[in-house]
Every structure is written in C-alpha cells, then in structure tokens.
Length: 328
Ligand code: MN3
Image (cartoon, rainbow, N blue to C red):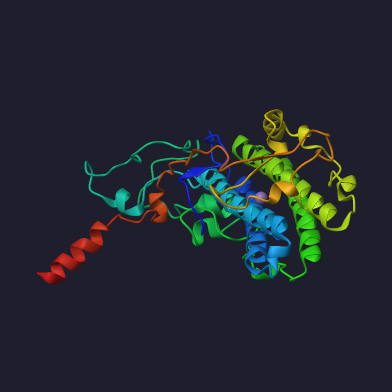
C-alpha cells in the first residue's frame, strides 16, 4: 500500500515570469528514458516481482523504499513544469469572458497570483485572431493542445513515456546493475537540464533531484558491493562532476541530505540499513537511515488558465442564448 501526503518534497520558488521552454526541457526529467517516471516504474515493478525475497530481504526493502520516494519525485517535476507554464500564453481571460457585455466582463483574472502575466499581455477581445499565438513559439505544443498548460507523461520532445523503459529481469544482480546505470544516466540529464534552464524554479527542482538521485546511485553501488564484493563506489562520480558544483544541491548537502535515506514507511522496510551504512564513497562521511518521511513543503496553488478552458467552468453566453431560445 502507498500512503500519500498533500505536500511536495522540494520548496519550489514561484517564478516571477513564465518560462515555457524551460518547462519543455524539464519534461525530459518527467517522461524521458532516464526521467523520474522511469526510476519510479523500474523500482516499483522490481519490488513487486522479486521472488525468493526472504533470502534477500535487505535488497527488497531498499528497492521498495526507493520506489516510494520516486513517486514524490514525479510530483515535484510536475509542479515545477506547471509553475513554469503559468501565464505562458498571455492574459488569463477566455473568449467567453471577452465576449461578455460591457460592465459584466471580468476583464482581469481573479484569484491569487502564482506567477506574473508576461509583459506582452494586452486586453484580448473577439477580434484577436489567435489568443494562443504565443504558444507557437514554445517548443512543447502538447502543453497547450493536450493539457491545460500543465505537465504530461512525455519526454522533452513529446514522445510518450513507455513501459519499454522498465527493466525487471528477475535477476537481482542484473536489476541492481541496471538501476545503478539508470541513476547515472538520470544524473547526466539533470545536469543538462540545469544548464538549459536558468529559472530558479527549475534549478531548485534539479538541485533536489541531484542530491536525492545521488543517494540512490550510492545505494545501488553499496547493494552491488554487498551482493558481489565489487567496489562499485570507485566508479563515482558519474558524470565526473560533484553535486557541490550546483548551488541548489550544495545547500542540501550542507544539511547532510546526501548521507540520508528515509524509510518512507512508519513500520516497514526496516532492513535496508544493512546495505545503506558505512562511509559515503566520495566523501567518506557516515551514511544514516532516518525513520518515516523527508520534510515536506506546501503544494503550489495553481492559477486557472481560462482561455485554455482550464478548469473549464465558463459558459459561452451566445450558446446559452441559442439554447434558451430553442427551449422557449
Ligand atoms: Mn528520482
């Protein structure tokens, strides 16, 4: 069973302006081959499928607990994308609102602001030939065509995430080796997204994922060492760059987060401390298991985007008039 909390694992700064193409790049961390959906589903299926687990219980506990953590990662990636897209297509007013008679039109969007409306926003009216025209200049069309300007389970090029990204072979050694490689590939992608996106929102997300994913690299290296005796930690870091080069990651490492795995359960997965112990292979600092959940933060309150019909509760006055005449 999975228990859920209405919090996210990283404190994402609210963008001062939208950054649609940063959101497009961050999609790779959601639905890319090495994205968070892949880590989530690899460890989830491997934990479901592990036969003979009584003989290898610490490995089962490790994979199951990390799988649970990955659910919180797809959630954080989704909110980063959604925040970066808020206001990305100009004024928050629908054609229906624009068409309302003078004096009745809510010309300005209501409610709490979560992101700034871009400077190019102007008063829309029915003569506007293309209220979503700004979206043409943004790389990821599905954000506007297939969703209400929000995250999708696709990579940065619009390819849908696929179960073909899951490796669950039934061989513990193969799966652990795969997981080590997957986390190293994920780490490379996170660094590249960091270099593509200057947004503090994107960079806070990436900094968090680098530190958390870094613990998973070490965990799978330690697991392979326990299972086979191979000193996999000597390969690190992959790629050859320390997390401390990224300020948002360094801040978390200064708090010791690179040394910590949480159990993500009040009662279970008690034996992965038999793997997650001893010195960190890069720094020599002692690894520790902490009970329960990592600290959580408030979930961003996302602004509506009425011209995309999101949330979609606006009625067209012309349509209402048409049907009221029809009904007499
Ligand atoms: Mn992850």
